[in-house]
Length: 399
Ligand SMILES: [Ca+2]
Ligand SMILES: [Ca+2]
Image (cartoon, rainbow, N blue to C red; front, side, top):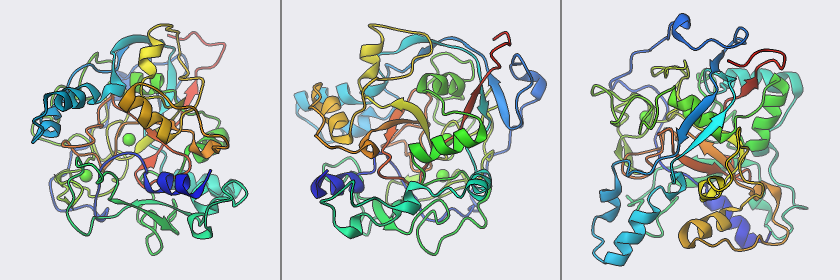
């Protein structure tokens, strides 16, 4: 990988959206919704501590419809062909909606928290990608300061930007040496008062290491969406058809002028403690928003178009990885350039689901169960974490 590519990748941490500090504001807060255990689906054996049972079955995955913000992307665009292109590509990665079947499994009720991740590192001495930095041997053309330990941190733009204008994408991200799960916003920040917040600034390999230690695994994206929907077919949002429910925010996302000014009508500028919002009908918290959740699949924005030609139960995702440049080309042109020789596995995109505290209705409207995006292992980010799943015992009857 040459420096140009590394710079591009480091500068272009995927996703969306924003904030300021993660102190709870004095704005409206959500009531907590502790589901009654007796109302939740029952698995073949008792659920491990902190996990809930996700029943297997066939469900509708994906979404064919405008989630409600297409008109915002079309504002000021008069050229008919450009309007058609924008409409076609609007959340194209979620189409076509199709049926998919998965077996039942146990899933963490919450995102993995700093408290849980700290126990893992205390017992194993594990250092995350963001703490280790990059190896010059893997990126021989990169300057030393591009290899420093660190992560991508949301940084409020100095001048207001329109995120939908060409050239503005990701201008609210800064590669921040010293940022890690222990220092979410960089040197000087800490998790001292955030032990029940989701761990962030971790990548796919960090998540895999934690899962192995915990005797669990990462979910496939088919499992993740099955779980997020809570048994409700074809809903735009976990809680229904509207972005808010009964006038309340049901997830930690971004309100205000994205990415320039957060007002935190939902109570939080950055991450929130897990369980700050109501659970879904499977007893899962924060499947919408708070932090993105890394899944086990490689990411391909056109994967569903291939999958429907050869559907299988318990799909594991694409066989071949894509880099960010390949994924963008595939999404924009429908063709995928060949992989660059020597691209490191840290450049292989993995699926991320659920959106984050930086997702705004006008831009990255991805705190929806069908929404798909990616996490690049090379660039851990402070709006991305994960949760784990566990299979039912092999000798049990999978209900
Ligand atoms: Ca928020
Ligand atoms: Ca989440």
